[in-house]
Structure formats: C-alpha cells, structure tokens
Image (tube, rainbow, N blue to C red):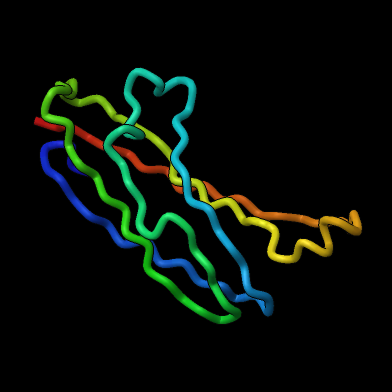
Length: 114
C-alpha cells in the first residue's frame, strides 16, 4: 500500500469446500512492527462473512491515512488481516466432537518511498 493516500483494495475469498463457512476478519501486527503498525488505519467490509459451498465474495480492505502520523521514508509498515473460521454447528460443540477450524493471515505492507 502507498502510505501517501487513502485506498481500497479488493480481497477475493472462495469457498472450495462442500460446507458453508463463517469467517471473522480482524487485524494483527507482528511484535517487531508494533511501532510501525497499520492496524489503526485499516478497516474491512463486511465485518462478518458467510461463504456457501463454491461461493466467492469480495472483501473490501480500506486504508485511511491518519494525517497526524508522519511515516518514516523508506521504512515498511506492516499488519496482517486474519480470517478466522467460526464454528457453524452448535450441536457439534455441545457434543464435544473434534472440530478443526482454519485461520489464515495475509500480510499488508505499507511503504512511504520518496
């Protein structure tokens, strides 16, 4: 991402499985980037995602520049958008079946070059 301007980026999510999945997107920053985090300037829409089997959805990732912050030149700023799968069947949880939920992170790197 270019840190000099506000932007919106599309993220394409595809459910290639045979079951409906629910996803909760959130942001996280690696420890080594805590002083160069993008989290406060990022938003994701929608805030909650339901993907039916073989369905594709577009998630909007918005970067809104904070004019009060001054970005250092030639330094990278980084955060992750994490998509966490949520349980879809409360009966399975109550019956204590083994449930494996997925979580995937996509790195977001902002640069302030020149």
